[in-house]
Length: 636
Image (cartoon, helix red, strand yellow):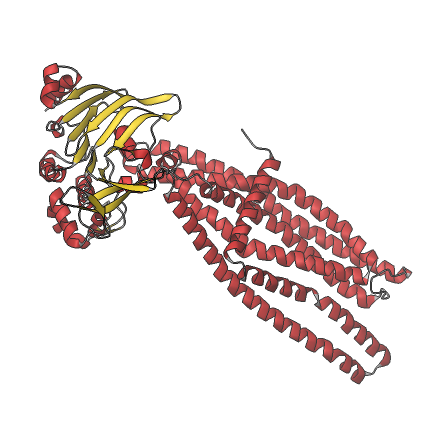
């Protein structure tokens, strides 16, 4: 549903208001001080017309009297006052520019921090439904329009408004009739500004959205460049990009066409108005039209000359105001998008049960401690009686009659019940889309269930703080993400408190130490671009080492060996067997060889568990698992 231009402008200026409120909220003292400097320099810029009139009057008297000494005595005070005012104006402008430089960059820094910090609290669902390139555009194009607003448009707007008002009252002081002539031209200027500027505003708002869409498409193509080349999709990609880029061109062209037209029209109206004022002033002087002014001065050449200069200043600043409309509207469009990110609802977390270091006493009781003992417990406060109980972290995970849907009305999981006791290895097998990964996403609460219960060590996971819940889980995802930094830093990502020795032990456990030591700088080798200089298998080994250094009681292995060849898999499997000792493990695998030794194997089909049992039991039943296993065996 398309919004009307009025609705779009209302939202746009609401976002501008929010931006300025943020800016002055960050700088409640420096912000107003900078604005005062701008006002002072603007007023000083308007005053010379008064001095010019006084100087012309002195010169006229000198010409008539021929007394240069008296004229000089009258002139010098005006000259020294002008010099003093310009010196103060220069100091004011210098202070303003320095303040604005500090505040603008500080404002952007704080805004980016607020955006990024807020983004870290967003649910996974948000990133699943928004293109990553479009999100990146918030931090580049959209935030840059806000920079232009606070550092360029806002000061220019205040300066121009101050000059226009100051000059207007000075003109009224000198001549009401000339001011009325000027206002006729100003009415025409505002009419043009409203007509042309309103058209450009609509397209500038669309331009910001089109920029985000283009960046999102470009990033998508870069991430999938190998797929594009493998399937010879280059020509189609070019056509698709041309379509997205063409839409950006269309709205940008229209926006800038309106904007580029506005300036020359206003300037030419100002030129025509200047000529009209000169003619009108000449007529008023020659015909002796009675002067009407706040000052009561006679309207003559000493008033007409500075008045014409003031009209230039007046129309020039009206033109400046009209030019700022485009920047302000564009900033509003960018701020609107940033505001949508900032206002995005964070991931809900109503949990109050936390994970704490614990000491297990000889009698089996649990006490909380600040020291790292290697033991953990769930700290469970009870609001009813004010007591606190501690439950040892064991890794007992139970799902009871769980239903789930990514979209309402389209169930993905139906009546799922899983019982994993501490130290058990539970495997999920089934076709793609059967719901295997979804189950693990529910355990760590990337998504919340629609119905049923999930209990962790007997505690409903809804009561556990999400950060503490996830800290107790180690996950190796199907897609590995490595970050810019050294190999050691990427392994330590699993546990920031781990020392180098712990990271090396984890790498050896995962079978990654062998290839790491053969890298140019070993563990200090820099990784960039998601570890593009490593093979897929090596990247997966680092992900397993990262999970190993976290040392959690529960491990989730989502196709952890899917990108590793058979020989490497044997090495990794030995390390993973050690890693899984004494832990509750959930394994998702297409290779049935990796799940044969699981305590329980669950076969899923269209979101339902259709079979469960050990490898031997399921083979004896000769059901779906048997068919999968025998088919895999024949393929091998």
